Image (tube, rainbow, N blue to C red):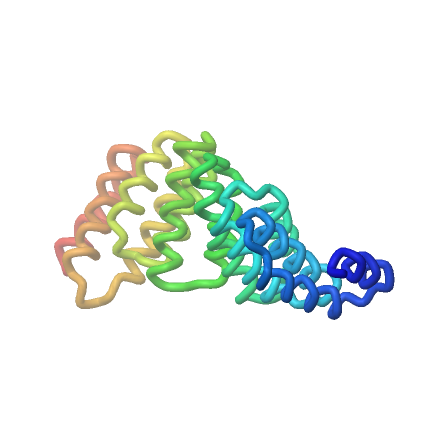
Length: 231
């Protein structure tokens, strides 16, 4: 019988046979809960005994789709994320966990999976992830210093990012981190496309105002004003 074979294959360590048995059982199971638990057991086999993490993730996605609050499935996804050496597996898991953490307001965990994704992407996608990270760090985790660092990274990726410039200046004023902010803004002014006179002029104008009002450095303020006029 199915139950006897399930026990025997497990006791003998015949994991592939056990997985195939569970897969066949899915075809005859009628109760949604039974099908969900069979999918979870198969995922656990692929994760721990059959060394096939991507197949495990496929099945865990199925489990989460049927039962969003399945605690064991979430724990197994988190374990697989910690162990992952594959960019594809990491990205799949991070994107599966992201809406779960957001719904449950697990902000620190959410930032963790957003950072995992950020390490694997570039360009516009990286900018969008870092902007979300910065907003969550400040608004939900009361960590303005981390938010500041995230906005600096945004500006390094997109020198013309207006929100990053605004948030960076606001946080620099709040945290007393003007040296880092002005260094980042100076780098952005240099990195802005040569033909983008509007953004380069805006950056130089902002720098002039910060040097004048916030840092009391009239020499640098005048220098940046002249540079903006000369564009």
